[in-house]
Length: 187
Image: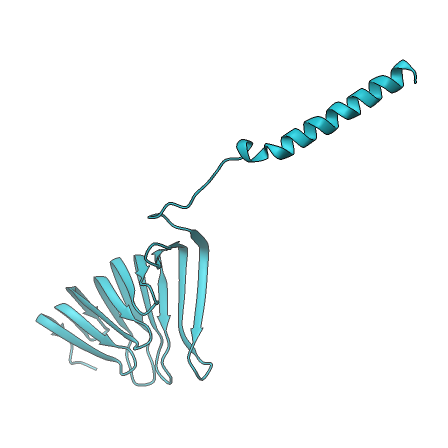
């Protein structure tokens, strides 16, 4: 063996030894991450969720800028959610809020902060806008409720109340207390 071959063999031997040492000790060089018990374990940006009923028809549709899931109590938090509730042969209800929270089991959706509910005009219904805060939605029952001040506007009236229960299936709004408003009986 000449000097060049010995140097090449020594270099190879050192490379193999160094690679083996790095592989054995790689855990000490990588950052160890753990999930915070109170923090999110996953997130989704530009979330788009469509749920169908047992007949395969669209039941409701939720979009949000972001969803964060928290494993400690299995809830999710939403940033700027928009929820559409579909009922057969009735106009769609659309609900927007600043943020939201979905309970464990996904039976209750809290739409928090400023909330706007819109119903488009239908064959027998006028367009309607409801403005409130902190709305609890039960998607399966297609109902919503708030204890906060609520303003309901249509092309013919404006009504304010404290507290509201909405039944989206039957297009029924129940005003809880302190109800006052103005009506235009023309047309």
